[in-house]
Length: 343
Image (cartoon, rainbow, N blue to C red; front, side):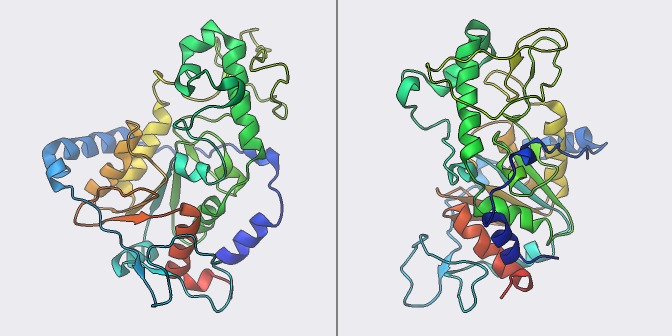
């Protein structure tokens, strides 16, 4: 079993192959997903997760040693360097839960991709796109009204993702799968950076830029070339379906569209089955995906939020770790699984 340090070194010493973007998620739909979802929803509506049980978060990252600057998350620390001491401590109950976990669920959002340079939907557009809003370019109505404009916008996103590299958070999540009995990875991101970091069977709640399909017959379109942003401007005509000649649309979930039922059922089933959930870089405002951590907590799981902003947490079994995922996750795993770190 490779150590986390060795895994990270291997990942970041060579450029990941772009073909890995086309790895298909393995089928592991639970037969009782709908039943578990209903049970979890009933528990939520019962009031056990009401706002009255929420409080301002405690930051469980205590400084170690008098020479370390208080709450400085910009430390330069590699988990595979000998003689290093982690700048922060973590609650023993959290470490024990992670070490003894039967099923770890990792739930990631835009904050993880942002650490690889992928803009979020909250970022202002620049250049020829400055007069547009991302929300105006991410609807079915917009695509039907102006297919070249919307396709060109999504090809820009695909180009950005193509040139981006998975960051240490992506790599550590992939390495964690080798350290625990079972790991489920659910992401709201559409850039496929998790696959390029080595993760498999990723559940994509919002689709993927690498999986376009026909707008008419729904047939997948696997023949996407290496993305190129058109030099003449933002517009780029989309290809046509070889099956029915329909227009090919991006394979992401747009505003106003429902999430894929199968992916959502898998996500909720994993939420109520896991005993540890790591929510990383998520805003907690996009529903129904935002309910996943709550469902896990109500089912008895330890819930850990890793975010650059404080997250409201409950008094029991819930933690808010403030900082960059690419810094905190290597530290957390090096403490939880010290034997896996190459010295």
